[in-house]
Length: 116
Length: 113
Image 1 (cartoon, each protein chain N blue to C red):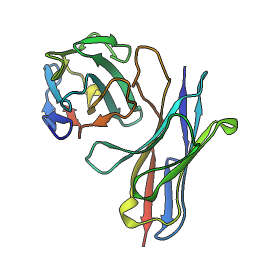
Image 2 (image 1 turned 90 degrees about the vertical axis):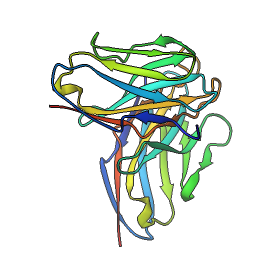
Image 3 (image 1 turned 45 degrees about the vertical axis):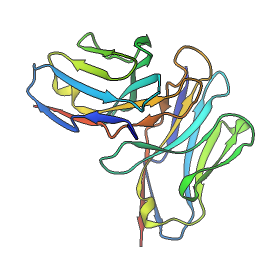
Image 4 (image 1 turned 120 degrees about the vertical axis):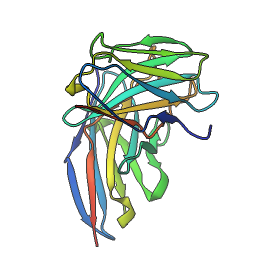
């Protein structure tokens, strides 16, 4: 079985400050890793993903994340927060292979608030 | 269509009634997923379709929940004899087989009163 833990259900930053959202996973095999963003009353939008290859992945809206196998982590960062980044962020994993190829296991989510 | 479409966007129903939630996936996407998002439970997987068959139904919470997919396209999630604990946002997603990115619809917010 696999699980995802997002440290901090709420994170608050000032506009222009660094954004760091933490995600740790537990999996018997190296998983595929994802970050999704959800704006109010909307569905989930993919920010970025790691499957294989380079462990630092860049996504949309200036976000990036680094897969660290030794730490079982996939933290999401953005150098400078913008007001429009305020949303809920979900880390998720897929166990490669098997019959449920795209079945996502989500973390509990982190609500990001950006102050002027 | 351009994206995953779900209907209705909001549904209020009385306890004990049956409801049907609809999902139109992106054209050509053979994989389709239903998830439920509720306070306290987060995002939970319900069921996965590959074409018209469902090889993974492990997330359906009870036998009151069922889903079908026809023509490898539209899917319907049915909840019979709704209970208040069924109140949640039901999200549908679709993807191409062999591609790991799933595209989500905006969800159906179900409220059972």
